[in-house]
Amino acid sequence: MSEAKGQDSFLGLNLPPAQIENLTALGYEHMTAVQAQALPLALARKDLIAQARTGSGKTAAFGIALLCHLNPRDFGTQSLILCPTRELCTQVATEIRRLARYLPNIKVVVLCGGQSIGPQIGSLAHGAHVVVGTPGRIKDHLLKETLKLERINTLVLDEADRMLDMGFSEDIEYIIGETPADRQTLMFSATFPAHIDSLSAQYQRDAQRITVETVASETTIDQTYYLCGKKEEGTQRAEAVLRLLYHFSPESCAVFCNTRQSTTEIAQVLSDAGLVAMALHGEMEQRERDQVLIQFRNGSCQVLVATDVAARGLDIEQLPMVINADLPRDLEVYTHRIGRTGRAGNEGAALSLFFENERFRVDALLERSDNAGAAQIKTIESVPQARDTPATCSKQTLSIAGGRKNKIRPGDILGTLTAEGGIAGTAIGRIDILEFASFVAIDIDQIEAAIAQLEARRIKGQKFKVRRLHTIASRTGRARY
Image (cartoon, rainbow, N blue to C red; front, side, top):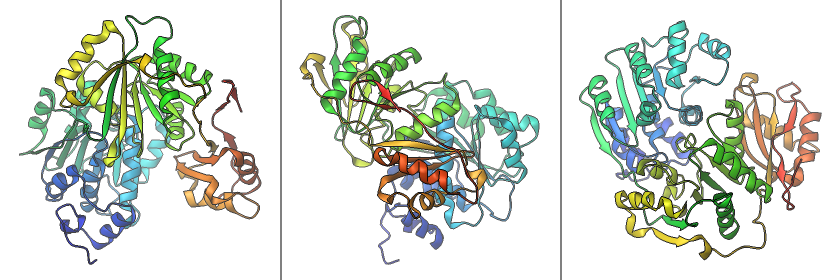
């Protein structure tokens, strides 16, 4: 390559040419701040504790390094990545697989709760170079002796503060105790509370510490607080969210709530008004949570109404707006929420609702925020009432009852849909392949043709059941199929 080896260029890391070519193909042109600081240390096998928020590029920061230390011919587990949620595990594993395309036959296995342990045991029986999982399920496999960690050379604790907040400290300690003492330990955390320092002191060796800006930049995120009245009554909060969505009409938006009940109530109000809105909270079955996130990512869901279970690990490249329907309880949660927008230099908007009896929370957030001077306080009445419903989703998701276990790849689905008598490739959106199911976003006006094509043809020589994944909100506010 003829490019200059700038300070933010991957060329300066002395990576294998095949890895550089893969990074270029994936669109990794320049290192982010966390990558520029962490990668040289991680590649040098140093223990690392890094402060970086979601969306900063930290997955590639540890993923590129751990892949350099893998032996593809050894199918023993050599790298273990611990994450707090199933959603984040899935995203991390997906990115590791992309980063590993330059290596032959690298196997990445996800081990999380919320799904049957049997298929996981079957996957492990055939070996795995990299394991990504939640602490509870990883510990389950260790106790069943279906996972061995004696050949681990790299251990990653992703969003360590969140895992400790969720009560995983004992599980993490048990898991670390099953790994070799000479392993490399990379710890990533959005905040550095005392228990993170204690964990680092206990399990890392001469850890190098780096810090990347954790508060969203005031130049890319427009932060506004809206006063909705003296005290909440009835559905005022949901109606205020609807008013903002009608006025600003974002292409997509994440609405954050403090409780499960709030997510379901607000999602219902938005759906009744004609928007495609879905709730996401921790009491949903994992299958339902996966499907909601897939639809939000592929543009089949316009508004995601979520508790903070999704504030971490929600990885959307372009999210123009977030709304705090309920004020978060502390600055760290607020930072994680608004960090979903204004990413990679794009502009974003963070809108927060409050009532007069909650003003103390606004004052506390502004007092602790580095961007207090940039935030505005307005009344919800200052937002004009819109007469027309915002444009809704142009796509719907189809579910195919076959996935990676059936050797299905995105190209197989694309080829089937566009084969003779099929639909145009321009009508096909994002394709997600899970272990036992696949999902594809299709233009709504091509849904019937897509279903007919998938039902008439075989994928990988097999016929698979196909169904529409969700209902579409109509202009009258009533859902239809």
